[in-house]
Image 1 (cartoon, rainbow, N blue to C red):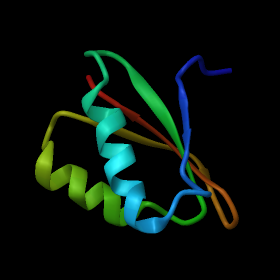
Image 2 (cartoon, one colour; image 1 turned 30 degrees about the horizontal axis):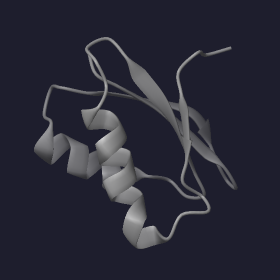
Image 3 (cartoon, rainbow, N blue to C red; image 1 turned 60 degrees about the vertical axis):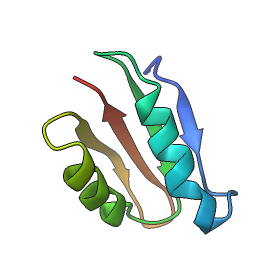
Length: 76
């Protein structure tokens, strides 16, 4: 079982989700990560990370729907 903190955004308003996720990422120390829990594939968020943090993040799907999506996002 992972000891990474979990950020479940399923009950957050959609307009607030990316800010919460990006803020959580920016607070990570090198080598740390967190588990994102979402109600849809966060692929658009991956594109945002790729544009803003190219080569500075890891993205590993832990569960791929259909109801729950879990992704470990890390800072190498």
